[in-house]
Image (cartoon, rainbow, N blue to C red):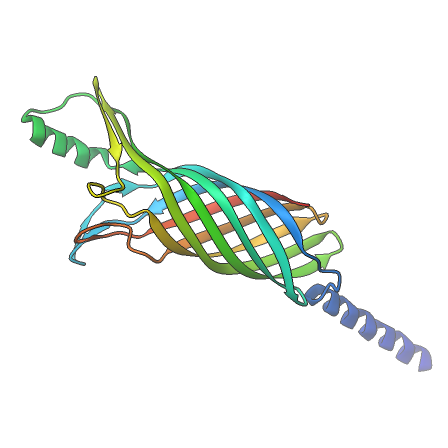
Length: 229
């Protein structure tokens, strides 16, 4: 009977220690990390007076690269500010553009588009709060969320059809988009062997990017790889 009680006590103590390790590694420390991401930009429809909709922009791909600073707060809770420079695209709705060009030129346009997109470059400043779970000695799973400030440096529309080419900025007084946006990011990440990092995350646009009487919000989907120093 005593042996059974001893074994049971050891088992309970082991389980408690394991649970405590999962939620509190007691070895948390601050560090810098480098990050690179594949981005899928997902613009919504342009809305006119909150009733009519126009599918002007479609999804586009891009990349971002930058760094983070990991700051332990309490147990495995952490705060992780960072920055990244991004380059991504929106695909333009070719049918709408073709109709507009035919109206301008007064004749049908034959042939297909060689290119029709908006190319964007800017900086993102995420302010994420997360919690990591030490499921194995060399594996941490984390969940995180937080606001992200987006500032566009440039965004140019490029259209090429047959021998006709045009380009121009979509920012500024004559443009249709605003430079700044605030998104709310949420995701899941994993750290391997204390240094290698991978994550999947999304960011929902909270600000209206369109000008005048139009409204449009844009979201992001990211696949991230990184290294922690």
